[in-house]
Length: 307
Image (cartoon, rainbow, N blue to C red):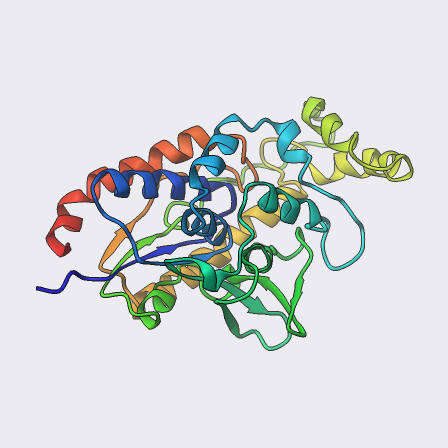
């Protein structure tokens, strides 16, 4: 019998995407090697590291990363369609060796992005892999759009959060999908009674905030210090700016994921349980990777049935 071509669809989910590393590691230990890798957003980044043979380097960086290393990748600018410019992220990918043209890799690879003008999903299958990743991770409101071939591209999670359809189109016989959006809605913020006018507000710890602000130019630093208290949560029952952004993205991606997967189900679905992991908590890689491994171990009977 012909050995089935395995496709791996790595979904979007920001910091939860470190679990993709654990998934790939556990699959390799089980003797399962995907020939086709498709990724959306953070899935495109981890998938690119895998096809480039640089996953160990990415794993090592993610496991050791502190807020200082993470903030160093955040080049803030207040124009251009996003808070973060993205040049430091591209430089980071190049330093890791994730920089060759996609067509040079042995495995088939595609990153999913979204055309900001037409709303169409775009499959990036050629050109420098770091450009494809940069476009796929351009989360609206946070990372500025990327321009490729005259198109302004943003995060692929807006149109195809778990790219099962892309794996199938590229010739996969058996598709393993990793859905990072299956355990999110209702977990990050629960409404409660509004605080009274005389309620004492608990100050937000500012150690991490100070480290972030220190990377800004001096003229912007003072303005940012004035703005940040209004962007962070003001109490247990009052969401801050980033609460609203992250939970809104969770709701959107959960709804899109359910709709797409209902019509395009994979053969094996892996759903890491990471609902308590914040959108930008990239410093919690160890637990995300461990959960990715656990998902594969639990699904091994189903995987062996297909493979």
